Amino acid sequence: MCMKLALLLSLFLLTTPTIASKFQFNFNVGQDTADDGEDRSGTASLVRFGLSTSPASMFRWNTAFTYQTGSNAFSQGDFTLGPYIYPLAYMGRKTPGQPFIYAEGKIGFGTLAKKSRTDTGFGMGAGIDLQMFKHSGVTFSVEQHSASEASTRLWLGFYWR
Figure 1 (tube, rainbow, N blue to C red):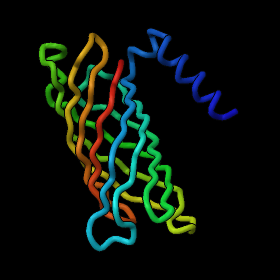
Figure 2: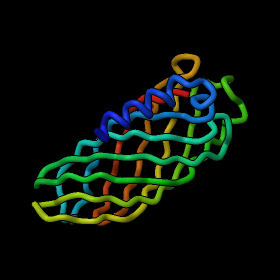
Figure 3: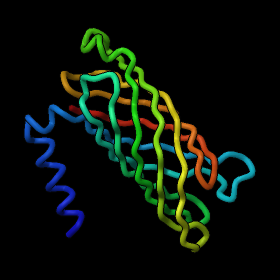
Figure 4: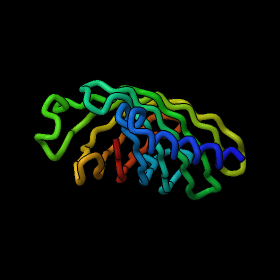
């Protein structure tokens, strides 16, 4: 039921021109590699759905949900919120790539080694949105994630406005 509601809401937001023009939607997949000496070792697979405000402005707010799964019975969902800065946003579509930097606060709920856990922290990163079509393209970013375990995250995905 909840999944159906989320799909319907997403479809509504994407097909309504006045709403869709005020946001940038992101869908990313990625890999999380825990730093040496952490409780969780190895890599985790990531899937992320994000929503940013005002795609034409230099300063944007971004919120996202990330699901991650990995070795040692690791499974977790993260909710994030934070500012994104696009220093070349004033150029608009004159440039095919829009670099960005960001910082996000995070709270996560999940399990590790069959034990429940709550995970809070932050992430800082940099990336680039490469415009492929009029209102969409590919995004790539690298993030240093600092929470219960420190890790490096690599993201690849699509964005559309």
